[in-house]
Image (cartoon, rainbow, N blue to C red):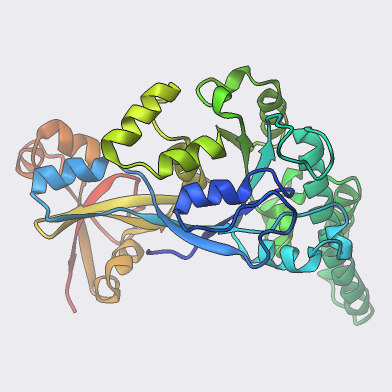
Amino acid sequence: MSTNLELGIVGLPNVGKSTLFNAITKAGAEAANYPFCTIEPNVGVVDVPDERLSVLASMFKSRRIVPAAMRFVDIAGLVKGASQGEGLGNKFLAHIREVDAIANVVRCFEDGNITHVEGSISPLRDIEIINTELCLADLETVEKRQERLIKLAKAGDKKVKKEQLLLEKVQAALSEARPARQLSLTEEEEAFLADLHLLTKKPVLYIANVSEEDAAAPEKNPFVKEVERYAEEEGSEVVAVSAKLESEIAELDGQEAEEFLAMAGLKEPGLQRLIKAGFKLLGLMTFLTAGEIEARAWTINIGTKAPQAAGKIHSDFERGFIRAEIVSYKDLVACGSKAAARDKGLVRLEGKDYVMQDGDVVEFRFNV
């Protein structure tokens, strides 16, 4: 994998986190009907679905396909009071601190056989519990920073006042259980906060875990609607999946999986939507390379320039970068071959300042 960015799966106990993680990674993480089943986080690397690769492999007669990948971390269930050490609180919070973005699983189905740690189903309450615990942990971080700023102010540091005002704004929000990501901040303020690595500043994706019956039409589920309204207010996305159904699909191969999907009224596994959404949440994109040996997707951050993208393949490519020969995937497919795309003037030579675009099919020229 060309990046180590991680998406942490969080949620209250018994909302379906580990079942979902099993389906995503087929890693066999233990899933059971009691709290704290997951103590050490399980990590799984999964392929990012990309139908473009098989098309390129056919066009270039590639011997193998190598998709992009991303890392999912299954973090143990948080409980009320985690920030004060309840359950295995401090350990869980430390694991969340290490991931780049959060996938918050909320239970959106009733089932008398599966106990809920709070005794009833209420996804907004569940989101609130997790937000509150993360806000309380962040409050502690902010207060420690404020104590340090008071000492710096006494020493005559003039930059301190600005940061103190910002921290007061952040502290006020956190005290109301409002995550820091919901605040409107300037670029300078964002830069200040980046050093604090606040848990509630991490981008969030909400995963609405629905019943098998609701998997084909989750928009009819009132719990899902609640989550969607909440997510829209903070600019986050929601992916509705049935963890139980996805774990069953994950056990099947090829034709069997397709038949199962059709029976369930689904066009594709919900996990494909989840993985793509996670990739987007982490600010990632892919460029493509293709030849006789392989058709491959390479993971880069959105906004990466051509030499740094070349460095993902090999450090020599970045060090000796001359230029990049690029054709967009859409243009290449429309023309039917690279030669035809070149004849139409659609193959471009780009230099060191070119910002890579998702779906660029690239051949780097370099000299070391």
